[in-house]
Length: 163
Image (cartoon, rainbow, N blue to C red; front, side):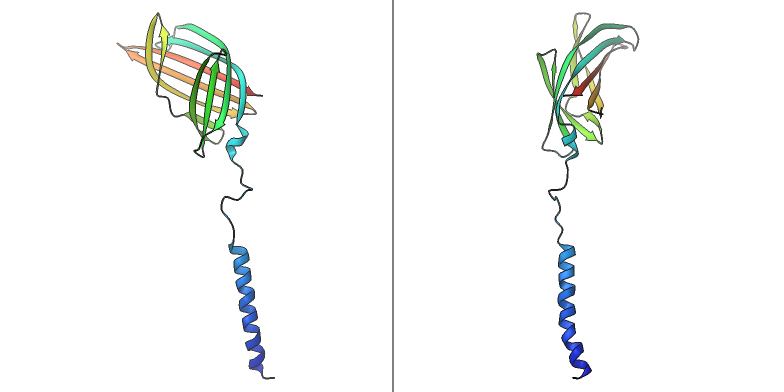
C-alpha cells in the first residue's frame, strides 16, 4: 500500500462528511411553528368602566360622564396591530385599530370625534393611546377643539380587566 492510496480514499469520505454537516446546520426554516405571536397574550374580552370629562381652556370641568365598558380585542392581518371593539353601557359600539409597541399601543385609524358641549355638537381632533399591564387594558383619549381662542377638550379614560 502506498501512502498516496490511503490519502486518496479518505478524501472523498471527508468531502461527504463536510457536505452532510453543512446541510444539517444550514437547513433552518424561517417562521417555524415554535414562534409565538406576541399579540396572543392580549387577545380576549376585557370588562370595566370609563370616565369622560369636558374641560374649557384646560380648567373648569363639566359634563362628567361614566359607565361600563366591554372591549373585545382581536388580531388584525398586520403583525403589530389589534382591533378593539368597544361597547359602552351595553349598547354603543365602536371598532378601533391599535398599533402595538411592546405592551403600549396607539389608536391609528381615528382622527376626529364629535361630542356634545353646552347643547352643541363639537368636532375635535382625536388622539388615544394606552397600555396592557397584568391582564388590564388602559386607554386614554383626548378630543380637542380650538374655536375663537377657546379650547374645549374631552378627556376619556377606559380601563378593563381580562376575563
